[in-house]
Length: 113
Length: 114
Image (cartoon, rainbow over all chains, first blue to last red; front, side):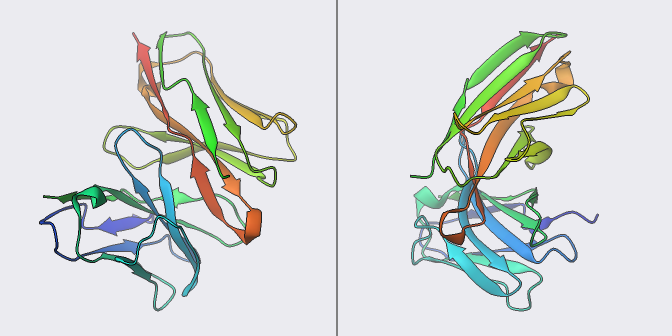
């Protein structure tokens, strides 16, 4: 499968715990995006990387959220001290710089109890 | 501010009829407008897109139109089939300040009745 992949697909955690998600973009895509989607809403932008540089962060991204892309390939999104309001689908997308098309992964569904 | 409005939120049509979904955007610098189809529990899939230098684009039963002056763009699906049933999202690129993000509408749940 040469598409965007995400792991895990589902995560259930208790309030206050830390969670980390991984995204593997399409090979050779140098841009990687994280979005969050709640029920009945469209995806909301969180942050994006070009290669290993994090170039933009949404105001939605509180200090409890951190994302990395250390080698310019896969990325991780960590949420510290999870809250019930963090429950959502976390989507990753990738694209080639200079091309607009973003291709999404299957998402990680987070449930915070 | 950055905003994309999408209407209607739900749309029910009979198989074979046409469906139209409309969006408006706020950022006059936006120049890329994709449409995604999301089936239940699956990833958003890019089905068609249009750039600001084009007024209309068609791909088989799907077409998208863009009115830059009015900041409107629409998705048209002709000869609808039950497998077209899904949630459709419009999006607009937000270019202010060098941004590369997409801002999405809230989605339209399309149901095609056999």
